[in-house]
Length: 306
Image (cartoon, rainbow, N blue to C red):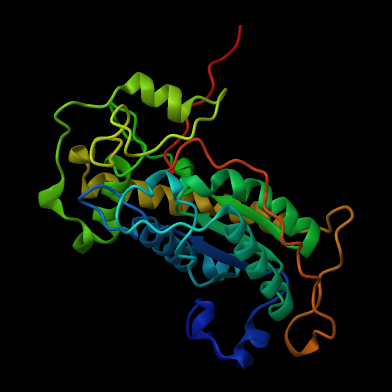
């Protein structure tokens, strides 16, 4: 009788267990977070905590059914809009693209799995990742998708104010996932709420992209864009549960969509059987723009045109 794996975290396995348990159809789940300010009440690693813990819960819920495996978290990404705040760490666009490509190359070199689901905890990574997964497919033969958790959730937020960064949604989820990290005594209500029209124009407008920053007093109060004071554990649990539930059809579609891309190179075999490593992707900065918003908040649908 085959011994079950000790866990579905890749780092917990031995090299012998890799060949025993992982297959080409296995799905690797890669959490990507950020180190950036989230107001005075949330820690710098909020995006990483959320991405990693959501990935863990998705793998725990659907891992056996869909053959999911959790990769180590990428902790630092693209956070230039928050670089005014002490502690914010940000990669350059070139280094972030190179990092993700190198991870993809190493997956193809050392693992049999050819399905990759990126769980993106930071909305500022969105535009780059949306373009980058096309290169991962063409250059590496990886079948990839990006999950944007807060956009995936169908939980009703009930916000009366645009929720972008460190606000009601993120604070609620942190209260549900890591309450010990939330400085509840620092959660405050803005004395003068930022201008909702400016937020809509500079952050959410799909017609124009602006290099907005979270120290802009028109948009934020102490780095927060949203109603953190309205957060609750109950809302956080509803958001988390919705994300985990909605992840299943996404992952099923990813697995079913595994087929050779036109013009893609044949993926190399893994481990000791890998006689020839997959080609190293070209180190070239993506020309994609980052998302128009940072906190991974749901984007409003564009207005219908008459």
